[in-house]
Image (tube, rainbow, N blue to C red; front, side, top):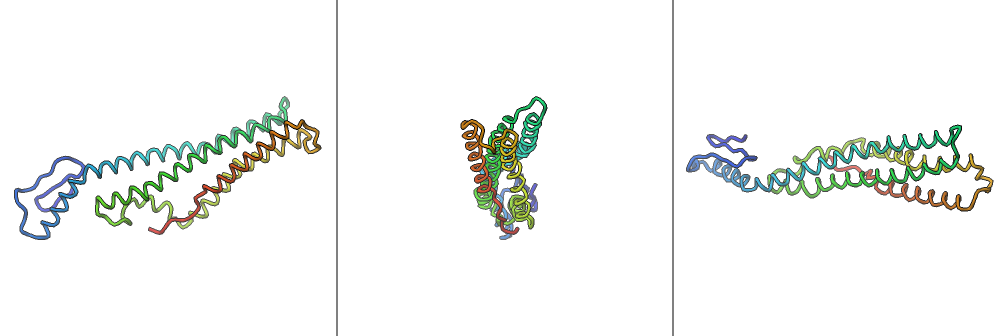
Amino acid sequence: MRTIGSHWLRPTSTWISCPSRFSPDLAFDVEASTIFRMVDASPALQCLLEEFKTSKAEQTARIGFRDNLIYVTVAGIGAVSAFALGKDGTPFAFLVSPWVAVVLGWTYLVNDEKISSIGRYVRITLAPKLESITSQPPETLLLLERAQRSDSRRIQRKVIQLSINLLTFIGSSFASIAAFLIRAGGLHWDLHWGTYTLIAIEALSVAVLAWQICAYADIEKGPPI
């Protein structure tokens, strides 16, 4: 609720109360004019706030889904490896792990990119629109969005996260291929050529995923707030 003298305004509602004529005070007349501009812009402001709320809800949902993919990948590769090393297992089970890692890793990467895209949209598109409607300085709007990128340890944190992603999706895949070659005697070149073709395709897919993970790492730090 905003109050100026006997005037009051509720920007998120549809009603306003004021006397029939303005005060002769020039400063008050300027403030009253500002209030009416806010009332006129209220539908646009509410539309932007609703868009912001929807964008952040989608971002939050994607963050939860993305983070769970790490645990799913570790559990899936662990289960496949346990079967391959078990009494009734077969070394060929190791070749399942790279496909699991590539599929889940690509899903992780797509969601991570969407999360970053939503953040960029809020900072680059929504923030200037809110600034034009509210007439507030840009540095006072959406501080949380800027604070998350201006953290003094952001680069360190992002590098560690990149290392974890590479270890989870890339390192585990190549380790599974190496384990298969060792367990199945592939180092002596006594396997069917089709098996080596499959390994080559898996290795290429994993390498492409590693390239994309590094390309979309978004390590750079934002401006200070």
